[in-house]
Image (cartoon, rainbow, N blue to C red; front, side, top):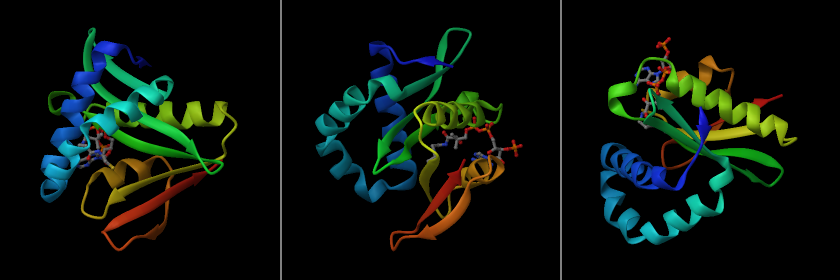
Length: 143
Ligand SMILES: CC(C)(COP(=O)(O)OP(=O)(O)OC[C@H]1O[C@@H](n2cnc3c(N)ncnc32)[C@H](O)[C@@H]1OP(=O)(O)O)[C@@H](O)C(=O)NCCC(=O)NCCS
């Protein structure tokens, strides 16, 4: 795991776009129209972008931010060729470690009900606390 550097941004963009194409294809046009906003968001929270690398190659990322006294996992992704070898769990741990170090004890995230990524969160001890009308489940870890 390492901190992000500027050259990671195009790969994060690609990962985020692939996520939208896979899980929310009907929102892709809207997402693309807001590219500038996404970029500004990643830059604003650059210090909380964690990168997974394997043999020096970019392999995944996560971004978290504080919100209303809690920590929120904004996004997490592992490049397809590096999946199922523990990088997602390691990124999630980087998120929980960093948020705790920042003094936050309520850690939150949300995930689509049909995304198998929810197993990753459950295995890390996150508990489901609710759901919204768009099919997203809210998870929380209290430490
Ligand atoms: C979710 C994601 C980050 C997981 O990364 P990963 O490196 O493959 O995860 P890990 O290897 O650490 O897996 C840890 C556990 O998560 C679960 N899991 C994660 N993704 C899974 C998937 N697609 N299918 C089944 N189980 C999955 C498994 O239980 C796995 O544990 P196991 O191997 O002991 O069964 C990756 O699949 C990804 O980038 N998906 C696309 C983006 C996405 O959906 N992000 C989450 C948005 S909320």
